[in-house]
Amino acid sequence: VQLVESGGGLVQPGGSLRLSCTASGFRFGYYDMSWSRQAPGKERELVALITSDSASTKYADSVKGRFTISRNNANNTVVLQMNSLKPEDTAVYYCYGKNYWGKGTLVTVSS
Image (cartoon, rainbow, N blue to C red):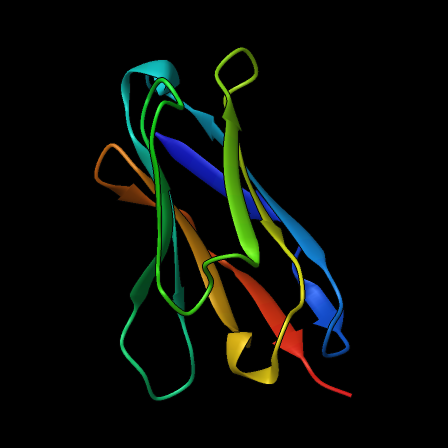
């Protein structure tokens, strides 16, 4: 199983980033997928989750209305679109599925 995140970087407050996670080694379309994040000195927290069939999504209160999770089961990808970014969104963002974690991608929101 492999989960590879991409799309992190430095962005100014109010800006946008699109994170992508490409999965391999398991039947991607059978599993719910999620994004979590861990800021320096803080515990990892769930940011967004999407069910295997995309029928349902769930978001942390802190990102509702700003982040959108989506997936494409044909190419084994899950995407986190992040808009109106705030400095408190700075963290390493991790993709999760089938009890596996990716290595993470760093998002820094700063002017």
